Length: 497
Image 1: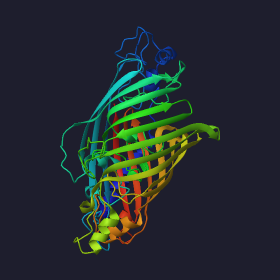
Image 2: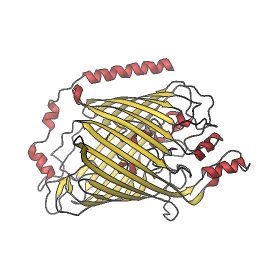
Image 3: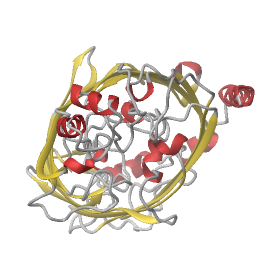
Image 4: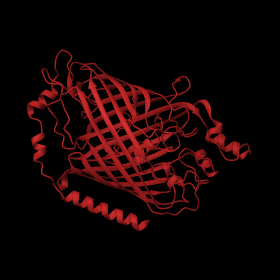
């Protein structure tokens, strides 16, 4: 197995080397670039309720294209409709690693590989200058390594969509369906701070505004976002690099929830609040619609500016409070030690009305043109069971990302990140006594913080096609010093259209 992995790594490095050395002609990109008049039309506002991306008299079919050379087909800046899509295929593997013992939820320690496939169709439509709707259809197949258990910082974020443990239909499903309403607080309009996509169709927005969103969504599209560390399509793959591991974000096993978001925005600040549904039980595919017993509140404050090196920087402070039918680690330990259960059982201690809360700090800073650094800190109280995302009560991450301008590969990117994760003492004891979570459980525990180093290189091949090589070194997988370290290699093929 080790020899096979070495051969795969050599092959991938050869492909990446060829991709980096190959510099495609950019004539097609120049030909597709919209004229200044086209850009002006896209930035102007049409009267009488026309869509924000559509000039007066402009055909809504979207003949004025953005000419985005990182998609197979150009996307319109002027049409009311939005249609796009992506495909992400991730092949991962690791060799055999040391393990003094293993349990039901251990990362299996023999050499293995796994592949995930994630295909998404994005659609959006501007009902008016201030109202938009969007809907995404998704198809997720394959599986993560070891059935996606054994690590708090699991090595493939796409594996969230295909997790084992609950029955899931192996067929396309409705991923997101939401309404966006923009309420102007001033007549002044500014270019939208977000690139145009199915979630942000308006190309200009009021300088001060309220935004309301309601429907089925992934909360991490709006909370704990980081330009350098939130994209598993072209950047990092690890769960606790792309997201704050201590943020037990309200979601079902696919990663989605039903929610309402209220957001205030101005040029330098934003405040957003979400009320969201929680799953009926931990790691459930089904959401609980009874807000009196189960719900999640999320609040984030955001500030942007050019306070360091006169370059763009953003700081986000997040707080969340989850309510649900939760078990308690201390109670599970006490019941086991009193001889009431054969092993510590978090499920047996579940009670309605319990809470889990936490905080997150998220920072990103540009340090040079197309070069940035980022960091996250996360803390959760950790006394009641992890409910939605991953078994992580303390997290710290730092990283950096650079585009390939310096080596004449402007659409390539390279990054490196370091993460350390931890859990509270009662959670440690629960696992040491043989308890199982929905991700972790080696049958015992020699506790040590989980440490992860991840690095990647993404090579843009042509228009919407790219290939990446990703490497992760994990020390103390699942917080267990008796297991690991493990090294995971991945090849990612990504297409956008």
